[in-house]
Length: 485
Image (cartoon, rainbow, N blue to C red; front, side):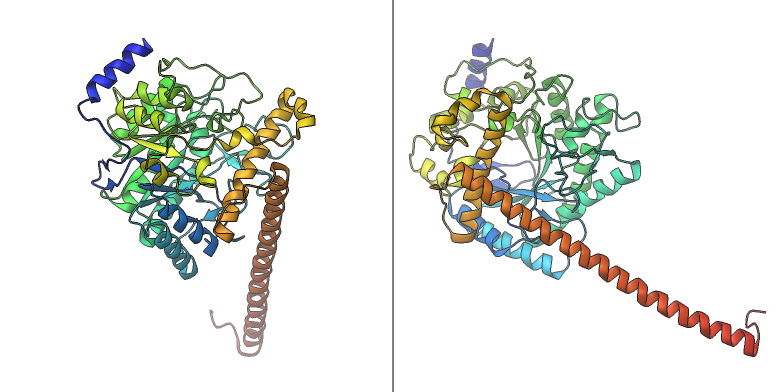
């Protein structure tokens, strides 16, 4: 069946014979200059209060030089108390002048080669580290089932809080549009808040936001409408959507397909197909602690396309989904990318980890490079003599996440120095990033303390003013008489 489906898609699209270098026209009218995108990668380069920095602008300038038709930013959070990690950019209110200027510098650098730059906007929900928020808000009070105590017990959102979050997505989208970003992507995958609402495993509500799929998708669709109202009909709006959570009792592919159809009806311009959560990190090709829930999707017969994590899911969506699809995760060989385009499995190919080191990967692919480096195959937290520790599932998972810190360190190095540092070890990178995040949180707490002190000072001045007025009124009353009589 998988082979037949693949052949049918080839026949349907063979006359088009798209190439990686071809343009993509979106439903809103915008055009991507080619079919290669830098996938969203967390940067951690904002200030402690969420302001974009010069390092962030330098990083995106180099990525703009790299030749991708589309750059997706890392997470821009719509709530300062719900970060994906310390160092996220935060837009949770209409930006002040400092934020406007910083966003504009970032956008100018990231579009300096006339490519698109879209802001990925997000709320982390229960996947907020305890050092940021010990009791994050979520659809329901379902705690992450991960060892280590990094994530606290969540608190179920009230209806009015949901309404505020929906509004905040629109505020954030309007801010980045005004700054010069050319599109937005709403993050509804990987176990973050909107993804949590979609999953019956994490959404156990009994109101209009819980229960059947239509209710569980209600917040996502409301966010889409809020964003579209904020940016208008000619501005690209995309959604990153899980093909599945790959967890027992979680969001399944059949539900993902239905949500994708609803998104299409809500004037979405592109859907990026991904998958997994922190508990089942399929998004980076890592096995979680629990057994993966197998989805009812035919596997491609192409050995080339099997290197991509979610291409089969995109292919299975193609009959019902007409908006452009982007697939990210696992692509390394040019031939596999080209085949995914030709068969209709993807309209846009997302490149992630290779661009943490090779910032010009798209240009190299378009110039004929046959395969991107597979850095992950040479990276390990454990030295060779301790490699046996990876046979222990918990340590294997911890080691896999540590490898992600190596990529974080590359992004950090490019932003600060203009070039990667691929000689650093996984262990050194882990120490470096953990130290950096600790420093950011220390500054964040200091800022919060200063803000609290300012508020206390304001209240003290107000109290003194009220006391003086009270004394004056008392004097006036007893010496002159009741003025309100």
